[in-house]
Image (tube, rainbow, N blue to C red; front, side, top):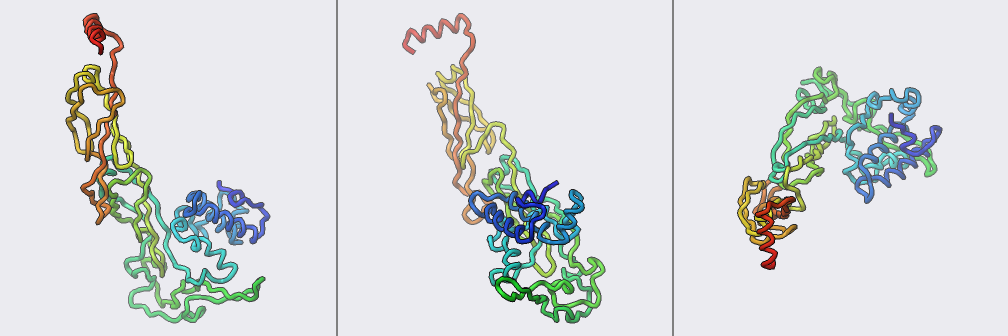
Length: 357
């Protein structure tokens, strides 16, 4: 169970001002866009703040402990909310709004929840790029009403509560004097209108859980742990914009090849006779089997370079098309020395020694 008080570093009897101050300090310290920030820590801090800053949520958390469920209050914080990828002012919106009744002079955008998923690809797919299709279940706009929540042909009347503005004005006193706040009207959900009949499919919510196929284009030369960002492929939001989809790529290791920038490295064991006399060997590359020439007198640790057999550079016009420039394949030589010599082999080595080898 997460201890929200411990996450924010406050006592259980902390005041709202204490909660707000702790959140502001920690959010500033761990914001992902700052040096030394932490996306995971920032998400935990945000989750704890939203649970404890609301009196009802805090009371439920204090009472039920591990059985506390934020989703019952309409705030699922298990996924990304986008703060880690936005301007820091967006993450601090709640604090500015509580103090001043506005958010830097901008209207707060209604935005759906971001979605994060992991995708595994092969070493070759990461090098050359690949298109993958995944089945994703998410909250999407209702196809029947187009996300409005209004039944087809139904009339809409002006909301009595907000008088059609979609916002509610409230005034409160503070150290700065009387402050007017603007909040979304809960009666019409900010639309300013109330339908006579709601959509029967989504029951007026405008959104429904839906499973669908998403195409993910893994770009050429992507590295293990990097992200693919698909804008608007997250969950829908009524009267707002959809969140984004973030796909973290996991690259399966290759059995012989290792990546260093756009170059590939590998180790090749050769016999003592091959080191002395040279010869031909076949090695596995991204393009299949390649025959290489072992030079005469190659030494332990020497690196043979095969040009143009590394990782492709992304095409300037599209990150999903490999360009002509590629890194190199670097082959590190390891000479196998015999543990025991036959009498004949020993005699031959002694002859080489006598000749000054």
